[in-house]
Amino acid sequence: MTVRDAIFPADRSELYNLHGYSAAIRSGDLLFVSGQVGSRSNGSPEPDFEAQVRLAFANLRATLQAGGCGLDDIVDVTTFHTDPENQFATIMSVKSEIFPKAPYPNWTALGVTWLAGFDFEVKVIARIPA
Image (spheres, one colour):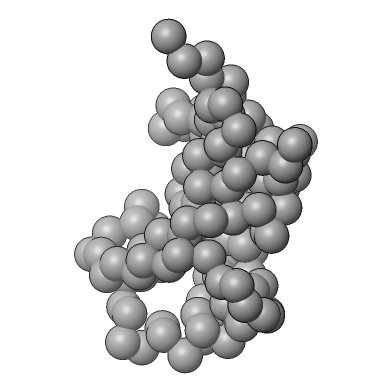
């Protein structure tokens, strides 16, 4: 049986308790990070879209750090967008700051109709450095 360790960032959001999930699971040398949203510490959405995307990536960084990883350890990214056509330019602008140079991680973007009050979510798989 594979051992799974639950990982939570230092300032754990109420969303994890409210919805009953872990921020990330460490399994072997991989870290599977749950979808991170632009939530404030009380779990509420950041209302400004660009700020929400930036906060989602800040929350992602905190979760990666808690699991012993950084942005450079990410191998796979999946993002969810409530209005991809109108949000694309903003997301790409922030993405170019987060991942400024090749090699870039895999990236799959999905349009969705509902994200529990949020407009952007990012989930990743990262390899934990030896």
